[in-house]
Image 1 (spheres, rainbow, N blue to C red):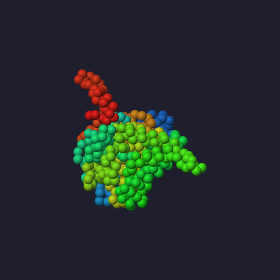
Image 2 (image 1 turned 60 degrees about the vertical axis):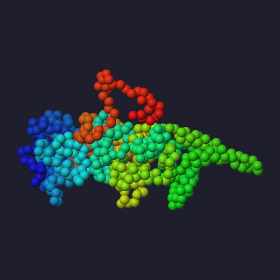
Image 3 (image 1 turned 90 degrees about the vertical axis):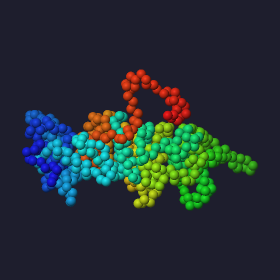
Length: 580
């Protein structure tokens, strides 16, 4: 039996005109017109038996007859003399039967309503039953719940976890709108899965509150961790310089404005290859030695590279006449490169790139790091399904380079895994505008953008999903944003950000963009492949709320006992390490 079994006398009105996915319905009963609300659901009778078309009310107008030809009529549309008109956008079809299943909702339109077909408002029990169908259809053995539908608080809103991560997702919203809350809600459910595998790029330590067996907390090594020789076992992640790609090394150590930049890049390349060759030879890694490239993740000693650069920079060679000498090809042309390399090496803020001897410079370290980051919760040696990496102590000028380094590591491991053996991983990119910007203003940003663009375009093939999270979607790389086929949009007040979201909405749902500035805190507009019904959802409260950093100014100012720990803050600033 159909869950939407309406009587003719319950009809809201009749179809007046049809244009692809837009339907105009004439409503003769003024009281029923007054009860209608924009963005509520309606059902229309289809020309196919057992089918009912589902639509969303987009516009409600009541026009005086003498003004009907010029008021409230969109350009190019036929004028309607009727007083009461409702514009409806069709979004799908409810089938009474689909094989052995009853009451199946599909995001397709196999037909459109006929002229004078009845339209019914979905309210009360009809709405509750329909929302129940939506919840069941998008469910499964492991259902991913966001919260409840705004249309019906009794109906739980489920999304398809496979499609959410396969086809990338974008979570946006102004500060304080509930982005971190939504992210925490997703992460808690991911962490519960037996073989969960996700990496969170945490820029401000917001997700340190996430607790449970499914979570592993790591932080990028700070200056104090180098002398203490802390390792992965201590929850400290080093990202040694030898893991960087050649392009990343050049962007970090070569000054492109230097006229000798091409020579410096070429000489550094040769020196690195020689240093890697010495490492592989000393360790008898003959199979690797025969096939490695400059981008192969092989440890090498930066001191060997500096020694070779110093030699070339001061090299004197035999002159044209016997017994005379002249300056070598690179004499005095590598001075700035040597200074930059030496300076970076002594910069305490970059200690994670230069771990203490024996911490992250042996052949086996990469296997341990990859197992921890990508092994998943059920892998041998794995400690948890969701790995939260705190980047809060990484200098902002090289933040894109370092985040891109971890993303590149994840992507390449997946790429070099044999077909059929890949264990999928999702990358949660918090504050994505900081390291995947639309306008790259440094070599570090260009390197990160290239990495994330490749993941956005090719990640699905290798089991790498992106969840891009930002309060400024207009500042996030457009290529990456355009590849996100799922949208969770919280309140947005900036016009440029709203326009980015509107461009992502299907033409038939363009009116949903008008909701962006009026969404409540914790309420989201959810559209995309992962959800059957594009609609507003109230995000459920996560068990562990993120440390979003929202401080109650007025209440704290009014508290006579409140005091700031300024001495500790100053000392942390001096040490470049957060003292808790």
